[in-house]
Length: 277
Image (tube, rainbow, N blue to C red; front, side, top):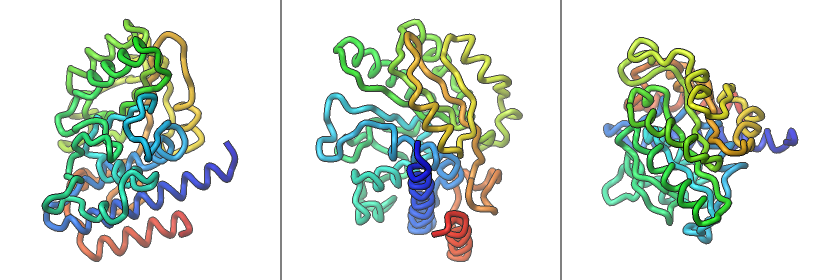
């Protein structure tokens, strides 16, 4: 990729962080999942800004790529990315968590908005994605299916059933990205349920696997563009929970919390300064 493309994606991720802060402030006492959204902003920017084949004017296009947010608490990043590419208007984005909104605290499937999956219950998206990938194979479509999971979410055994099934089915149109921010709602993931060497585990299940810096857009796009033959792709993206805001980074309480005006002002200042906006 060119330096201009990388810079454009960095700016997109920064705008998405600012949009997430706006949504969280607007949610008021309802609160919002800021920490897990901030850790995956670059992942979402790479997907929606460069990798996914989508058509906002034909959202049900059969040959579109599918994206499933298994870690549905990335919703602020997800909505912000969909707004960036025109599936959600800026006016509708501002209705987040308001009465009557289509943009709830966890996403509800709505193809018109580019939402392929209803999230909330963790560990289920991999099974849905396998079904989508099998369907595409059987019908001769070239689209790919992408799943974003959290490392804490991998406590759920249903993920591992899917990790066994996908290579057996030779689903080389399936990509799983693990947002490995090393912190879940209850504490550090290695203390709650240690994953150990996750890359070695995925390779032992016969996934083509790579470990990358999940905030490095060059690495992200290269990994997402890679297409192994005959087996699925796993990308372990090492990230920082709450990335981009000093008082949120690696702080468990920001998994879900409310944002004061003063905190919002400081966070916006930090994001803008880092991105030179």
